[in-house]
Image (cartoon, rainbow, N blue to C red; front, top):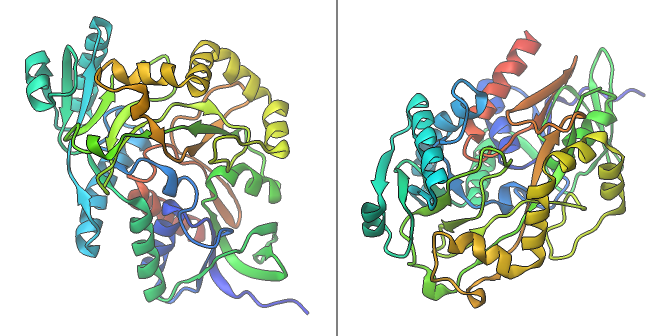
Length: 402
């Protein structure tokens, strides 16, 4: 006997992007039957729950890109959502600190990009920087007042509470083992369950490429996991800075560099670095998955990205293994910190889509089949941008569904 189509929309992935999309689908289609599946026993267990909690203003992103648009819209929407749901947040601002003349030049280029993206900035000279942050040293800085901090797990929980209040359904501990699609429906199998729906939206993060493969969708990318390793400072240093402190990024490098981040609970973290991961969901100090490692090594894009970023990759790996090297990165702008100040803190894993030619996918990437839509790359600042991303996905679903 063929099972009936039980749901109008099925979603996979209960991070903040999946939660945002589920809620906004239910808001647009109040009568729709919507089911959100998550393989973990609770929400936000991966990228959402392992990030630095920053509400980004959109400093770094190319004007006209989805990143720039989503970040600008997302920061405003996130602050407003937190106000409505009484979620604690702090609009503390961010300082991008230049410690060399070369970084001062790059800082000026960043200032131009900020103006193009309509982001408020305040240039500071060395004296003004010292006055604003007495424990930070540099030649100059850019202040970005619109930057904030929040706990994104709490934001995700609030999104899901609103989703279920509107009639949406969530099933945790529901790891999808197979997907089938035909002209009539999408069928999802997890455990002993077989569920049929009219349309599937996948927000699987670190597993996005593997879910695509379950449907046989061809795509020129793979997910490579990059570990972001953090430390936290002793509680005596909770007031060491009043804002977030970032280095001026090197445009030749793929990530932003080690920074000081005030957390919403009062702690201050140092990090992250960026080293290749050998386990997609490996958050401990030593992590290895045979399957994930083989997937890395078999993919031509892995070798090409390693070759392109060999020098920086070796530096990141050295600093991962040698704590003193990591310390040197932050002492460039916060010289008072000592080795003993770097205390253990959980790592995060970034799901980075990489093409077969070795290029990193820097903007949002989607794939689709007749009855499915997949978020293949939702790069930082995806947490900041989760509300406009969800709105964008809903627009695409409406277009597809006619």
